[in-house]
Length: 447
Image (cartoon, rainbow, N blue to C red):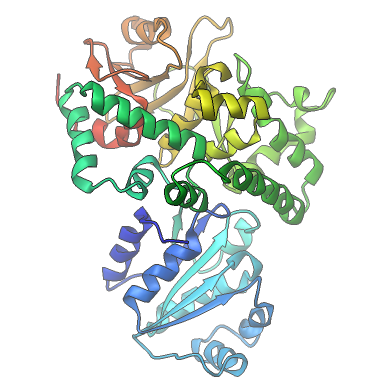
């Protein structure tokens, strides 16, 4: 597979340039490109690389059994693989599939204190025992969560240059409308990204073949792999219940009110019977959970109902892959995304927010007369973010901005199949600019 440019490339280079760098743990869902990105970085920056996969090479799990002194670990490692080159100052130790060997995380403190070798660990979020790993080497490691490809990385894969992407942001920052050609071209790119998602192997296949051939099969295989991993890694939690929730996500997203209700997963089921299942899927990197705010006001954290939430797929391509064959055909050939009640647009904008570091919150009052898809914030205001699948009214957005009861809301953001605009109350942007939102809110002009 041709190696795709990723944002982690830049972050790894920044990590290497820090003379006081800590051992790095890169976490993320399956098949998002962790291992390939680390290998590429290692080849370009180290004379010697020692790569160990604790799932495929189980014999190496025992190298920590005699203690965590670096010399002891390296001695045991050399006993198993005497051909490894372990040159101080020139060697990267890459420990892959960390979840299969928690003792490795404990050793990172010793490697940092010793200072002779750089260490990068990688692990699937699915299967990592958080308490077991995160309590080890506190203060002596750096955690990095990787995601599937965002829209900017997708544009890189298609051959777009930095200057062209910078021009997109210039339009956003200066509130300059796109030409019809620019708008049509970027919407077509965005529709491709919605159908494919950001799994590197799928994007690479599409770019290489210049069509969707085989991509749906790849999406369905990843979905099956996730099911297999749930069965494998769910541990003490009821695996069947996690699978029940996982399989029902598309059903709830297809409803007008996308609230996730356990009683609708299995008839007669109670929330307490499913405690921990949604959190497990979120921690595994499979879903994004969006909580309903108690009131549309600051602060965001703590101001939400933990029992009222929506669940989105973290990668929109997997949502597409989970839909019925007829819906698939409609999306891929007719490009008719509106039939799925806006779920796909909400899902992808939610994912774009998460990839910028935003937690997800929404609001819906008890009567259903006021609702908003997402909320973010800037330094001093709460910002409602509306995702419009069709060119309809924006009554809730206008109410939140104009009514005195919502004093923390000064302005809003609307994403849709629209050009750039500002009406004095809210900014309108085409969907494909959502990955710039955090930067825009930090740098926007006072209008």
